[in-house]
Image 1 (cartoon, rainbow, N blue to C red):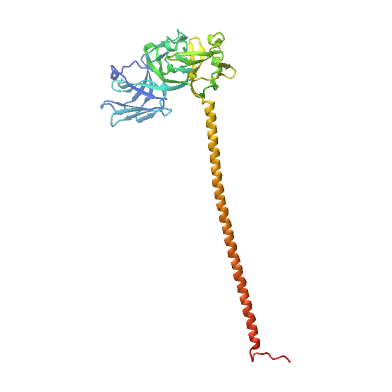
Image 2 (cartoon, one colour):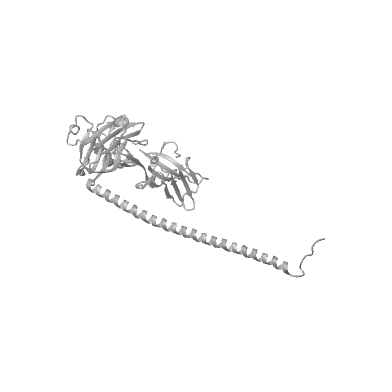
Length: 420
């Protein structure tokens, strides 16, 4: 973003007096398009400006047009200003928006006759950043320069004068002892620990307690969940992971959600806890592997009434902090007698099917064998007849040639005289 040197304008923008800025809200990465009409009598050579207000009468020049340059872009190419002299309109396009681009902007035109900068239009731009976090994560936010307060919808802002308070604790009741704000170099550094799903909402960096938004965030916190099913009298093992650096020394608990918002602790790693010494649920055990960051819960001889919603939780001084939510569903196991009967019935069915299949295959094979035998017999008879026919033809041919020879010997005049 091309921002020129910071300067103080002791000039008046008469066109903006008493004018409320138009509000615009965009997601990070979005685009904003603004048109600022100016007076018909304004000269074509007059310079048009796009300013960002910094409060206390201070401004920053973002972009301007020049005499022979009707279109100008910022160095990073995200912002553009264009002067359409035909329609007497200055248009500004802000693309690839970032949360840091939030602020109040206005168009102005330089009047070379009166040496003033009449304002054309003012807008208030909020570019919000989406933050997706898991429960118990830690969120760190660096606010932009000039902001020294952290606010949330429906809650009191945390604010402090620059240079007087190096650090401060949030006064938000729902985030008590979990939010800290540090101030240095005209910036606020916000840290939110042990995030809970109820922390989801809209937050923003602001100027003091005026709640003037400098940068907005939309926070969404999600819970980790598991769904398990088991049969009655079975055993299950549940593993819950945590960050070793943050929660290694914190006690862990296994609790069951009851009606309302309470979660009854069944077993805990805290030695002095009544639940740890309780014998009411000897079927439940908990083990914390601080080297791997894994809490293991074992439930034995499950019963139908064990169905429900459970938590792996951190046992904090302020209460239980959910690590994971587990939904357990226990189904009734079939009786052994019924199981044996079903198994025997299945075996009998399988045996009956096998016998029928074997019988069918035997009949098919027998039919095929008979067909093969008939085919062989037919071929043998045919071959035998062929042999008889061939032998008879040979015999007939031999008999005829012998009769011819005898006939030629007894015919007169046909005798061959003896050789001398």
